[in-house]
Image (cartoon, rainbow, N blue to C red):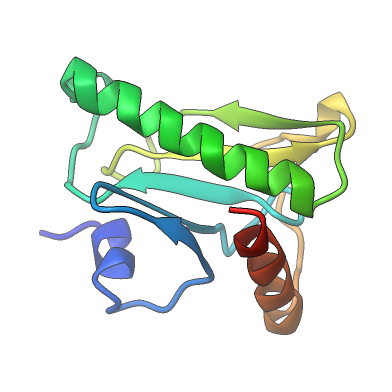
Length: 129
């Protein structure tokens, strides 16, 4: 069974795409902790991050770094926080969250962001990628 992320990658579920390459895909989280909260996923379905082979794992984090660099330029923040939890969706993923305070990254916290604002944020991040 395909994960929700595989369906997003395949275009079966719409998303606010940020960037992709042949191996990885990034998009705005529709339940963001902060404006600009991005998810980075491998295109192949792998449930557990540490099941990736070492080379793919390294490329995954390098791609996430590129996304984080663009995110920091696009969304005013002190730093971009990163988290890997891996329990909520059986598809490895990295959360990238703009941070200005320690309390900005709290799982379960969700902002209400309009579709128009999400589109604007996605385009701004894309422009720096």
